[in-house]
Image 1 (tube, helix red, strand yellow):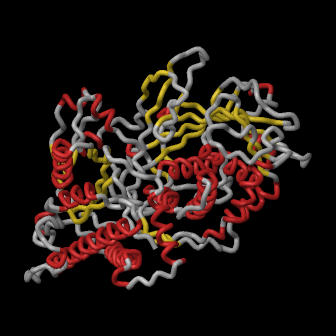
Image 2 (spheres, rainbow, N blue to C red):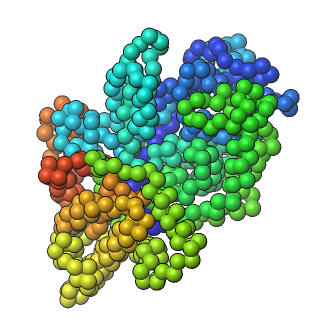
Image 3 (spheres, rainbow, N blue to C red):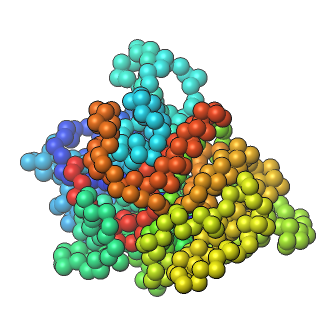
Length: 599
């Protein structure tokens, strides 16, 4: 069981029929095809495909996907998700009905039409340091939270150099002129909040919703406080009209699509968070999807009928497979696994709601260098120790100690989440006596119960005890993570991050700070007690710099954290930039949902 408080950010996917040139592409043997365009304005790219259909078994896959241009850059997360989602739709509503709903080129009136989808990601998925600095804006929580929505990734012009292999942080989009000496370099600095999982999940949800396969909760763009869910949909055309069932189907399909795109079966937590919002998660067993994963991996690249020019099993994302398709047997395996008639999916989802007095703040930490294989190195160390039958005393085993601490956090968050007391009146001033500074107190001192004889306010005493226990557990978790990093030779919590986390925890009202996920140099999380007050509109010059104006609620603790990080950047180098993400609730509009966002 992984215990976490997620700061959920959202990716929106919109579908509409859009007039477009429908010429070119296609393969012999496929009777009907539909032009499919996927717009990604933030990455400055349009992915253009042919989606082809065959309603009779003549040696071809029932549905297949191919690029409309040989020069198109491949995106495995988009391509495989499209194929899997449309294969599921085809199985559920039939090829004839699907073709009726699509602008196919066998219709004389719609020979230049395309089905268009637009991908837009919350700003927090990508570092906004460059944008803020280009506008001469300080890296503060207020400025980050008021940026325009869906900012595009920055572009740089670089001299065309065949030795440029920095593909992890850039996307090269060569100009049409083959003699051009320059190329556009799109700077993609991710913040590690699960952008690929959010993309896959929203793409699957949008396609299933658009073709009336599932119903999903609905949230308007002005609604930020919905706590209830819609359990039924009166639209009789929808196959799975319960939103609960719609989320279950979408979750299962998105898990498979994301696993196939990334080439492995991960924990699935990123997809689950995109579906459900904040929750305590127990992963599903790998064997549930491994058979269909194996079948799809073989079918996508070695089906002789659908990949005649791609006889080798080449899964190179830099070269789009000329043809993606699955046979009917594999599609049926996929659908049986997703529908899960016998309910063998064993992931456990437990709602998590932080008290309203608490919130989270994330930081994009730049200036360090993180190894992307840290998690694999830790697991390799653990496996080696097990294979060598290393006898490690339980008290000295950081892995076992971390598991025990996670269970303690699990229990604490579950108990406070189930409590009916929302602690609306708890503020920083009522907790400063129990929230001590790790830089001035020993761990033993921090673990002492609060010295509070004021028994007439049991709610506040209970909440203070909860905060103290949470703080203790997070501090122990940090100790165990650092010990684990030392024995595995991995900087899970580097000294630079330790110093930053300790300094942040010294601010009154801060409960915990540390490195999220697999650790490293590039991020920090903070759990704190809010201290809010209504304030007048921001200065007029803020709007002139691209900041949205209007009244707002000032959070003094959040601002103090931002001030510390600004000073830290000046004195210690590097960059610590806050993100706009905040803690959210579970289900309803906090997870995957439909919106009224314009195209």
